Length: 98
Image (cartoon, rainbow, N blue to C red):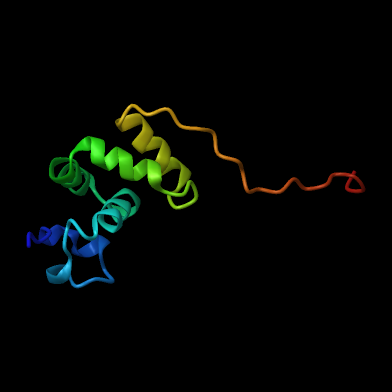
């Protein structure tokens, strides 16, 4: 079993790095890299899994699982078109507040 580089410890804080199988934990590793990783993490996942696999996994994520700015950055870096997300913000009624 191939192990992850030590620089993954900070973004996989709830796992023992020695027990992390990069193939079995692919989705977790990629998601944590998108959410908390540095450029070194991003390069590693692209080199290890390949850009098509990373994009495929990104597209499978729930739209709320990553911050909107992170999703936009991923889309820009991988030249993807994003569907506009529905905002969860509620409209505040203005009647009676004038």
